[in-house]
Length: 78
Image 1 (cartoon, rainbow, N blue to C red):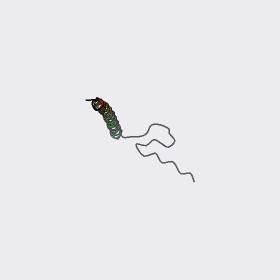
Image 2: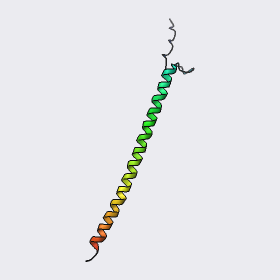
Image 3: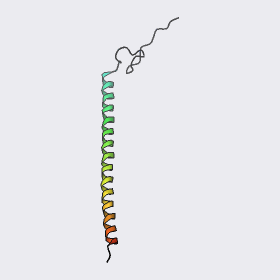
């Protein structure tokens, strides 16, 4: 005997892909809010990583300058 298909639960697309998903408007708003928060956290993490890399590059450049200055002082005859 053929069993009728049960409708997909709210918030999930139907298995056959036909039609929009049935989602409560408040739930849809919460999903959008959580997605926006996740994107914001990702952007902050990206900014912090870029900032740390820039700081490290500046530190490396200063360290090379200090090494070069010390080398020139030590190699100069008295």
